[in-house]
Image (cartoon, rainbow, N blue to C red; front, top):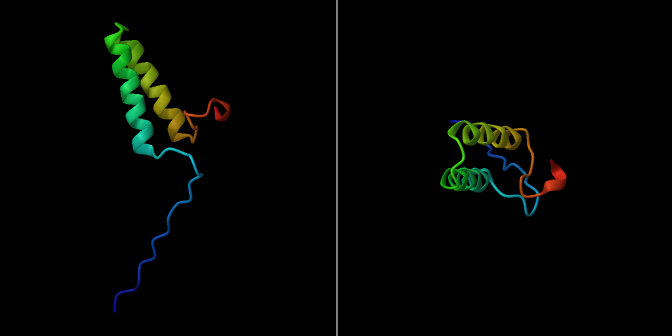
Length: 66
C-alpha cells in the first residue's frame, strides 16, 4: 500500500493577497508605466525590485509592512 500523502495548507493572514494577484498588479503597474512613456530600463528595474520585495515577504498593498 502506498503511504498516505498529507497536504498542509500554508496559513496566510486574512486580507493578504495571493501571489497571482500581487504579480498581476505588478504587471499592470509596469504596463501603465510603459504607456506613460518610461524607458524600458526603468520599467525592468522597477519590476525586478518589486518582485524581489514580494519574494522576501513584503505586502505591497500595506505600505507599513515594507
